Length: 475
Image (tube, rainbow, N blue to C red; front, side):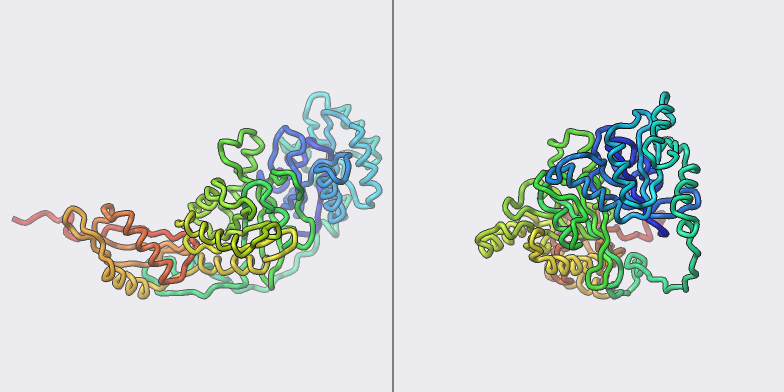
């Protein structure tokens, strides 16, 4: 992107609505409640012929630095410092407030280019608020309606005028043709292909951090980044939007998604919290690896187990992080107890990697990242058809399928149809009669014999075709 733009203003003036309008997607949560946005959210914006990075920020408020609102304001001020241009949004319908004038003075002192935006200008009686905006001393306001998309051409012209045409329209550089990489899903996708592609250790990796409220998810990501990029504090439920951040780990690009804490469904009553949880679920579906953060001082709550089960049912690879390990006294005894509970309470994720760590001190972060990489390697694993059929034959010799209604079930052929997660197809007779217990036996055998611990495994059964099924009986 050519330049970076931060959207700032007091709460509930339509900053997130404008952000969603510019990125062309409903990425940021929008609600009538003031103060919905708390963290900085970046996005790729498109405005007519302009392309730039846009940053949605929390509403500016005057408060002490130790309060939640004070920490939110600090995040917004960091966004202003990092941006090349600021869009200062005011509410033309409600008119100017003392807060608008205070933060208008703050933006003047920053020395950065500012575009004054009068949002909600389509409303009846908004002319007074529009003309009042001239008194801020930030130039002529741009009347827009972020909700209805009005005034976007005028906003584009104001941004170009403030940032300069050379910065707004950089010369395009011809890039050399690059080699096309084939993903693990595309290689060997057809049944019967006998290919085991190597794991690509340079491919960017998407990781979602999920867990109950106040488990330490944002603190963990901040420790990885080495800066206070995400809003943290002792209050539960600070994070609302699913915020993505990028960083490099040993030369590999990692894109992490911080998500809102997920409480039990019965406790989620407010509309805003429902939107936050839905956003977290979207982050899980978009990610490749999901790190479920447990509070090591109160682990294995019912909600923890339900989150792990949800992640596995979505087909994502899971890693457990026992956070707040610095608060545990008898570490050896607690670690042995946690391992025993992991095996006993999560049989559907046998062998799942669980790492003790501390987001506050940075203890165990390297081990956690190694567990993430190893789990992703397994999640992308492909096994040749020849190996699978030799394994299937040996498995049936050791433990044949049971006879149902006096008739044997024969497993004839096996192949891997996809990875991410590993999925297999077995051609057999009477597929609908195969007991669930034998399916678990096959699944556990695959985990052990092909070293695939902790990832969801799918096995599909297909009835073998009978070439004489439609042929009429001869007399």
